[in-house]
Length: 86
Image 1 (cartoon, rainbow, N blue to C red):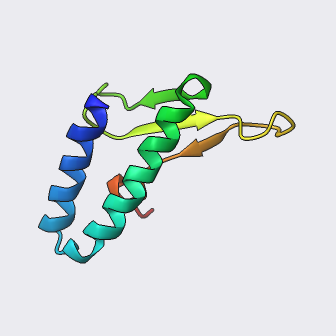
Image 2: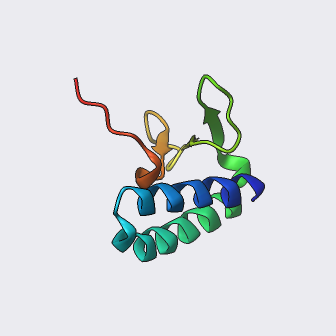
């Protein structure tokens, strides 16, 4: 939960800075649901950090949705990602 408070504050500030303040209510609602989902099933998740190991930065959450699935499902907070075009 410590991670969530710091990271979500950064994302909210970035959305405001980028002029996307209209996204804040939807982001806050979705982020709250996401955090509750992860916290409720925490033992099922693998968590990945970036190269910098910034524990207030974006994480990737991975879990096996169904035991019959071939591979894991990865979850991200989309508003916290930076789009890079190639």
